[in-house]
Amino acid sequence: MRRVWRIRPPAAEPHGDAHGQRGPITCRNHHHRDEHHDEPLAAIQTEHSCRVRQVPVPCKPARLLHLSAVSEIELDCVLGLGSNLGQRLTYLRAAVRQLQPHAQITALSAVYESDAIGPAQPDYLNAAVRLSTRLAPGQLLALALEIERTAGRVRLERWGPRTLDLDLLFITGHTVDQPGLVVPHRELAQRAFALLPLLDVMPEAHDPHSGRSYSELCSLLDRTGVRELPSTRAGWLE
Image (cartoon, rainbow, N blue to C red):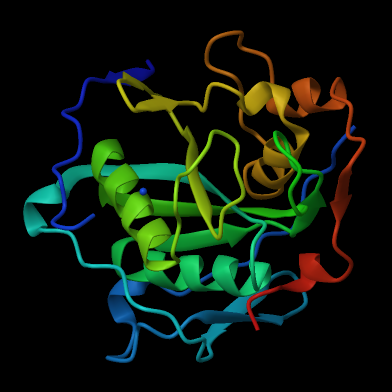
C-alpha cells in the first residue's frame, strides 16, 4: 500500500530558497564518518561499482536540522540536482556533501547537460542522488532549501537561472500532496533531464498514478537537448 503524507509546512528558518540500468555509486554509512564529515565525496571506480572517499571543496555548511525533525520511518528517496550558473559541477558536488550528515547516499547518477527551459540563460547540469533518510518529506524539503541558500540561490523569476536547484523527485512507496511540496514531482514524467538521472539510480521506479514504469515513460520523451557528459558515469565527485 502506498502511503500518502499529510505534513505540516517546514518551519521557517531565521534569515532563510529504451534506457538501460546504470551501475550506482555506493557510499559508506553516514553514521560512521570521521569528524571531518563536512568534506565532499569523491568516487573511486571498482570492478562493480564506485566506492566513495572525501575530498575538500569550499562551501558553507547547511545548518543542521533539529532532532525533532527525525522520524521513525526510513525513506528511500531520489533528489534531483541542477545548476546553470557559475561553477556548475562544483555546486552539485557541494550539495551532495551537505546531504551527508542527514542521509545515507546509496547511488549517484551520471551528469547530464540540458538546454534551459524559460528565458534565455546558460545550459544546465543535471544529476540525481538516491538516499536513505529518517527525515520526513517536509524536513527534507527544508534541508534542500537551506542547501540552495548556502549556494547563493536567488529566486527572481519563474524558470530563471540558478546556482543550485534541488527537487525531491520520488519517494519509494509514498506520495506527498501538500502546498509547496508534491511528490512525485509534478513534471517528472514530462522531463527527460529529470527522468534520465532518476533512472540511473532507481531503474525500477514506477509512476504511482498511472502505474507505468518511468523507463517506459522516458522512452516516449523527446530527448533533444539532453546530453550525458562523458566519463561521469564512472564518478563525478572529484
